[in-house]
Length: 600
Image: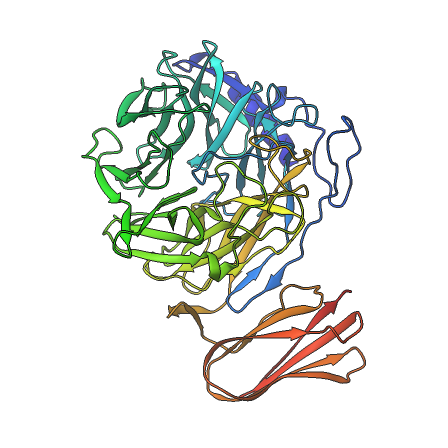
């Protein structure tokens, strides 16, 4: 019944296409060809060519920690063989509709099995869920020609997508696509009035006056000035590109400039762009990060200000500089913005960390390489991938909580390439302090990366706090679409929902909870070790014991007086047989039991 309603709306509104002004065309989901590549859990794919790897998609179950309940992985309707998702920025691939949180929209870039590098089949895919992420509608191509690296925002609940393609005048440029109503899938294309200067890798923001701002950088190869351009859509047409940044050095490269940049708004007329150029020699040691701000929805822009510059340590022996991808966000109806970037000293991976920078100049460390167990060496080079990378940011609806989900490259496990896992941190004071990193995935033979957090996430005082994320899940480790030689494997855009548990604050990087809490062990199933976390709100005697399925005690993990706070203990079951076990905590009148599974 719901599908029929969407079709009726699209058909009725399509009758008015001719009255719309501007350089645009309609992309209607009624005219699409259904993508036969929809993911089915645990179903292997057996098609040619033989050089491809068709491994089953194994989706993880949910689990609980001291502060967050992590829901199960849900395969969306978008999957394919393109596994290079961004050139540095943490793009927005998911948005939740604040007016109806059950409506979630997603985008991704994919290619089909005959062309995993995307030479001709690469497409921007759009799909949606109308039941809070439980099920996903089949995807459509926006547009149905080769396009790259779509980003997503919402305008009155309707999807707004930008990507680069050659659909206007046959020239590669950034173009905009606006859905006619929420979830209709009937996108109108708005192209630039002239093909030059050419633009790629767009970033967008929807303003409170209905306009859409767009940043794009010049498609530079060989020698040329690294340039950033700005354009905006006024509801009818896209304006011509206007330059907002020129580097002082010419680019000396073969694959084009790798400048990172962002655009975000506070929803009250204030807009800021972040500019992180890569200069001529493409090293870590010479790139500042800049910001420009508009207070009138992008009509006028303030001066270029430096928000980060490389600096020396140990008497100048070491240099701290930016590395890898970055994320940027504005708090709604506030002047507070937060920019997150990986930094390191002299390109040494063991010194990698995620740095948060605020508009007031305050800085804080979200995570370090040693804290999350990141690799310090790469088995094979991975283009534009740092060991802590692609931080994506999003806010709770009430603005009290800022979430950051990021990719971590793990030590080599003989997969040919280093595999990546995802971690999450959050701040309850606008990025001044951060929680202990929480590991979301732990899959030595599966690659999870390119996370994206919705800008808006349900949550307010007295109501549950949710975090809506999507990320690439690839059973074949290693890049194939760009800068790699591993066999191509099918990856899936996976959705996951996190729900907060009784969080009241962060102190010395530790989460503070209102109540006693026994978390689900992680990983689970496990072999042979797993970790168990619990929270104490009073000091006292604590016992934590493990029992087998017959109720026999097999281990005592804790039997001592402990102080308040979050605790963690490791259980080593190397001497126990495979099977189901239970662990029970007793302290201060609080008792709880949870099940865990040992698989050898």
